[in-house]
Image (cartoon, rainbow, N blue to C red; front, side, top):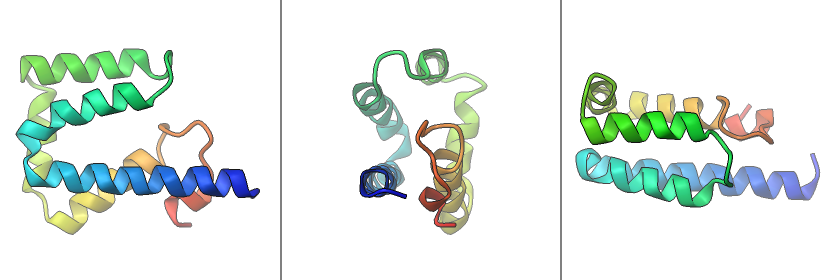
Length: 103
């Protein structure tokens, strides 16, 4: 892996950790704020349909929003590990490498 990829991976991992810590403080208030930050950080055209679905769920506070909040009833360590793996090792980063996941 070249140095640029390593720096991107480290920055992404740090940003995800900071966002998850921010969400831990008050999920109901901070989920909408986190989505606005995500919209600002991601380039235009990246995951627009998915982000729109999340925005709709957050605004309507319906069936898709409830599981997000229920995740905060899980053990803190389990929840953080799940979210980090889902975000870092899932489809989010287009430049994903195994090292982002800590593997």
